[in-house]
Amino acid sequence: MAGYCLARFSFPGREFIYWLFFTSLLIPPVLILVPLYRQLVALHMLNTRWGLSILYMASSIPFATYVLRSYFVTLPQELSDAAKIDGCNEWSTFWRVMMPIAMPGVWSLATFNFLFYWNEFLYAVVFIQKDSYRTLPLGIQYFRGQFVFNFALISASVTLATLPVIVIYAIFSEQIIKSFRTGALKM
Image (cartoon, rainbow, N blue to C red; front, side, top):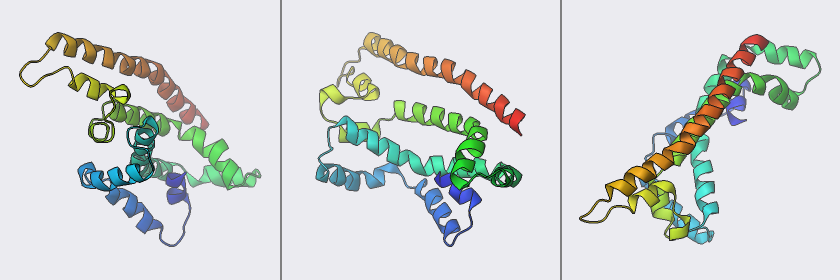
C-alpha cells in the first residue's frame, strides 16, 4: 500500500519519503545490529521465532515499497479513473482494480523475499542462540568443526534445504505466469 500511495497520490513530502525508503536500502545490515539487538532485548523477543519473523518482515518493507512503487507508476492512470467513474473509492480501486493487475510484481517480490530470507544468516546468527530455534543456514553451519568438515552431512542438508525452494518455485511459477496473462488481458 505504501508503494501505491507513493506512486498515485501527490502530497507534501512524498519525494522525501520515497528517497528515505531508497536510501534505507543502502544501509548495510551490520550497522544496525547493535540497536536491533538492544531493541529485541527490551521487547523480550531475543531468542524467539516471533522476534526474528518481525525483524525479517520489517527489513523487507523498504525494498517491497521501492519495487511496488516502481510497478504502480507504470500502470495507466486511466484504470483508476475508470474505477472512480464506476463508483469505487480509493480503497476499492486499490483492491479491486490495481492490486489484481499488480499481482505479477507482488508474486515476483514474494518469491524474491522468500529466497532471500530462506538463506539469511546474519540476523539469525546474532539474534538466535537457542539450538531449537536455529534457522536452516545456522543448522548447516553447525555441521562443520574447527578442523573437520563433515561433507556428507553438509551436502545432504544443503540438498534438503533446496527442496522447499524448488517446490515453492514450481508452485508459484505457474501463478506468476497466470498473473502476467491476467494482467495483460485486463489492460
